[in-house]
Image 1 (tube, helix red, strand yellow):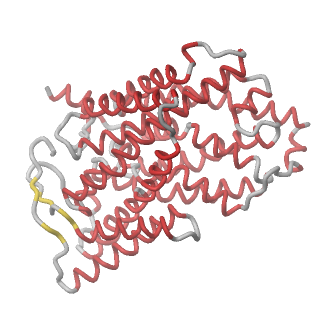
Image 2: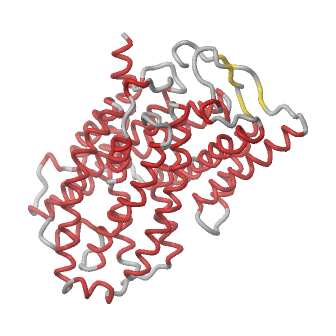
Image 3: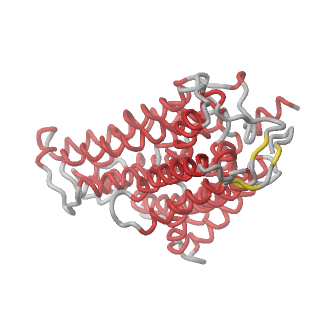
Length: 453
């Protein structure tokens, strides 16, 4: 029975045992497989039309550095605790607080909302590219059909959990490097060689700060929930550093390759640029595999959040969510309802995920070692049967809500980064005041059961 749980449950609400932990290389490849996605590639393509080469490179470096540092810090927390982001939040949000925050932001936001939107976008792009390639759309690439089988593929690897996501990453990454690298080289050759690249001026100029905002915003969700993967690392810090180095080494390559394609061709996005260069089949592959490696992660993280909320096994939750997402994606592709209202709602919901990173970082790196005297990172959090949590940690909830509102209403700076920093500061200040004034800031008690629930 325990073996089955290890294979299918993926330790959704319990600590990852030693016998299933993975190497730094496995962490690096798994994270890299997730970042090989349409969001990053399409963002890179859009930035390629708005920046000259020097500005583009500056934006990539600084945007990647911000995402890399946030994910490094949250990833190390997962490496020491060996549990998911949503279980970690039991200490800083309380048991009920972690259920509400995880289900609302990651469960509904990533696992259902962005999963179905990405499956729909997958179908739209598949249909568009096939029309450009062959002048007609085969039934298998027809929008509603592609949405259904695309969502099914994504659900399959999400059900398999970490193993499925990691396996797909090892297949996809080398092929992406070859296709995007070949496309970029073809674009450079088409433009007249490497010497011509610095001379290319943007067709629709944007500023470097705007570009950095786009880069950070496109992947801040991943930087917040790195613990969902880093909990599997053999050494406690390896998952966090794997995140940092995959961001600093691989993300710039993806952005640069995608940006060069649109910078040096008449195409306004990567798919059109590759079709212009005569490699539309490569674009088709990028869409299929890129969305697969990313959207299964959306579903996986959402299922982990719901596993902390409802007494159902992760595979069951994953299949239910995948089926809902497939139906909604297909109906959207049919035109039954528009995607814009959902995307607006999810964009708003997305402002509530980054504050979680700020609270986790503040609690683990400052409150626990310096205010509570728990200098050993292995002892800062306790999990397992009999562990007592508050039902609600009011400072965690207040910090989360306040930072989300700041990110939503303050127009200056990078919204996602504003959320992380403000949550960090608010949580620190309120906790320090409450502790020094001997004010109780939690309600109720909850005891963890043998199952981890």
